[in-house]
Amino acid sequence: MEKLCYVLWKPESIDGAVLRDRLLASVVPALRTLGATRLSLLIADEFCSALQKARITHMSDPVAGMLSLWLPNVDAHPAIEAVLAPHVARMAGYLVTESVVLAPERDASPPGVRTRGTTMLALLEKPARLSFEEWIRIWHGTHSPLAIEIQCTYLYVRNVVARALTPDAPPWRGLVEEGFPTEAVTDPMRWYEAEGDPAKLREKIGRMVASVRAFLDIDRIESHPLSEYVLG
Image 1 (tube, rainbow, N blue to C red):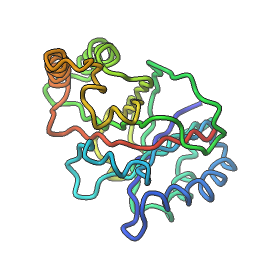
Image 2 (image 1 turned 30 degrees about the horizontal axis):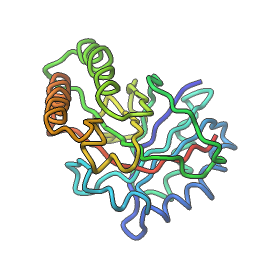
Image 3 (image 1 turned 120 degrees about the vertical axis):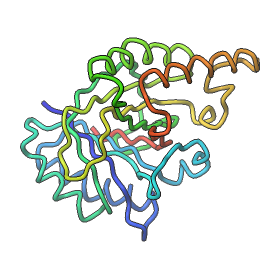
Image 4 (image 1 turned 60 degrees about the vertical axis):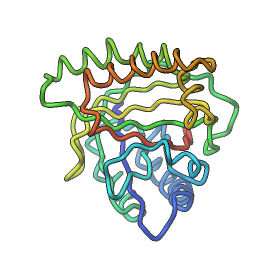
């Protein structure tokens, strides 16, 4: 089995909730007929409207979300893209290797119902100053453990890009899914579990910024607060 991730952009004429509904109603069933399993959707829908001040983007047309799925064989990806194409303005598809570093205890929500909290989708480029091996060593060996230690994260999934599947896909090498309580997304005290202590907050932010700078160019990071729908 192989995991594919499609970063999505929505048409200007619709909002994120409409795109979500169309994907859930039409696209997901069609993808299942093509052999896709373990589908999940991250989307900037109405539940994320109040969180957009936490978004970090350098795009004039920010991403609308990401659809993830598993296939027995990546060679079937053109059929997947043919199903998606009529519903999105643009897509960037990637074959990835997945590491579930921190898995939540899922609630009893049925497939297609929004899960608790908010998922931050980080889209990462490897700086030219680092080899791929060194980049992975810092990201996986140093940064991931620190992020889990000092933030209120309950979900941490690393998707390392093996190769792009679609033309003109941005040169992202990592697609990271991090789950947070929604109230923490716009509240640094809660995000960093600083317990109301400004000194503790400054110390944790300093550690995080230093860790990020060690393996990323900060002016190239994309980070988007999204709703998560696990579809099975």
